[in-house]
Length: 366
Image 1 (tube, rainbow, N blue to C red):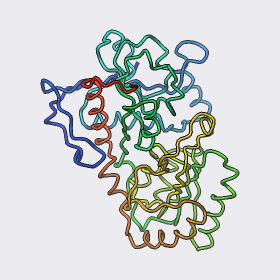
Image 2: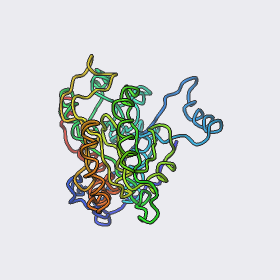
Image 3: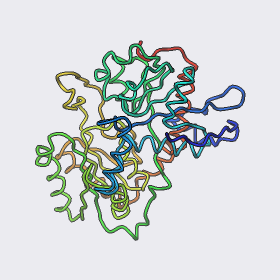
Image 4: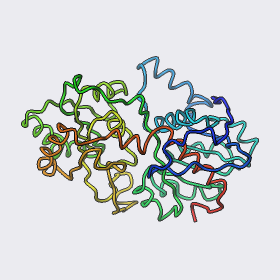
């Protein structure tokens, strides 16, 4: 069990973290001048062969294959903890013994849903953002639990889930802005980082989108570096962003888009494929879920961040404008992240949602 140092601080001593930013609520109030201790639970894997082997398997994998790739779910958890540390908000991590002895306290389960099966949870629960892809995946599993809140990373995802979870909440995790930093222009040696996060029908989109984009860039005289989702380590990506003047981001849709936001934090303008249309995860579409709302690959993005395009033709027609504006310094992507998505703002927002979950009696499933 990994238990964080528990510190109690006065709310007045906490930085506001820019709480007036549009994505961040005001700092929540507390009773008695103290903040509650958050009980955080995050697991990426269940036991496979014997109790506790989930702790051993990663060590064996690391010994055989080297340092593992950091998943998006783990990055959410790590960044939340880092933000809480900066604010001095106390928390425990995976303290199952404690939470079973204190059924009156809120349990914040960020990770996978199999944690709900490990014992009979009597506690009020705050679930997400890395629990379920869609309410149909949960089915009736949450019916008999004391669920006080369910969180998803962005507004379009919340709209999709509200048919089954009427009071679902939105929470984006913060970005490590002191890690993902701009590089001086004099050190830039590559024009474009082509980030390939096309997850489904990759062969089709290789022909319809990825290669046409690459050919257009090369024909226009731009130097291009390609990185593919799931095939790199964070340090590789960070080094690539340090070399590149801009990024073309190719992904069908994103619930938050941490990698894209790391680029923005690094001061790299983004030209993003934002095709819209229905949510097309093949595990659900079209046989289980049909959602025709405002799906986006860049749910956290404004004019400071860069530009978007719909398809290969839209890329070709918009590229020159994007590149000329990049060269002119018209974009300010890091400013957007600093205004909305710092570690402190993400952590303060999460704490406010946890406090509200305990104060409000509205059940998110009804």
